[in-house]
Image (cartoon, rainbow, N blue to C red; front, side):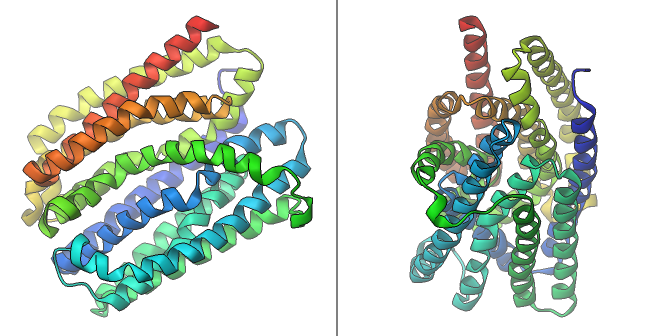
Length: 420
């Protein structure tokens, strides 16, 4: 058997194609919204999305990651009943917690209007947008279940379908001059794609009656609390900048940050390829194939350094031209923010690989300890740089936080090898 089994290579290929399509659609969605909506509408859409992303970290309680990292181990061990118990409990729990969270968000609308947004916000638009929370919460659980079941083609078809439908809904909303159509369509598309994935995953797992869950909830909750801390790291890489700018800067800076972000998201989209290797990490670790793991991480680290060095002069010299081509001339001030976010996204690839590895082999506490200096850096750099340097500062803060995260992971991995 080679370094990477054929099944995972095929899954990685389909994930690569889907990630490419998703990245392109994500960019086009933001491009059309940036040029077809007002500054306040564009800032509103992505400010609320980032706010929901922050809320979802706590609503999920890390349980979606339990599906990603526990199901492959249970399936590989032939414990199909336990697999069904885990997924069944988590999906029910998240449905209930999403409903509770929605009503709390509705109650908090006056607070958001006064302290979060620096421009007038329609309360009905907020209430409609908040409905997306249940689909977004359960979406990751569903996707991770399909990934664990090695249904890579189905998973990537659903992801691609969602991105294409979102792009079409944005075009329809702009054509009809209706921002509300964009919001309503976003809620419906998120919900329908989640339901489709859940239907397929449910038919492949033995979903048991709640009376059969003896001992399952406490174990899932314990693991979930650790994963909740871990998953918050993803928020720091993508949405923390927007939230910091909403509180400490202006709508214009939020727009610039979210002009740079979709360019970086074309790199972030390839995270789905790393998820494919999660079962492989478990198998290599169980069979004590440490040499292959070392080769994998060395290859990935070398490729990351090469990409960062190659991209830096390109964005520095032609960043403004790139933004003019991708969006329009009025957003060229996002040049350095784009540079910082793209470099951070590339640097995040080995970070995510280490994240998946330590969690897949049952070393969740290592990933949790690694985040201590990361959170410390985030609490300092995001508010400080967003306040004084706006979007560019938020982008620089993202890069610094990801660098701290990678250094901490490398130290933890080297230490683990030394102990073994």
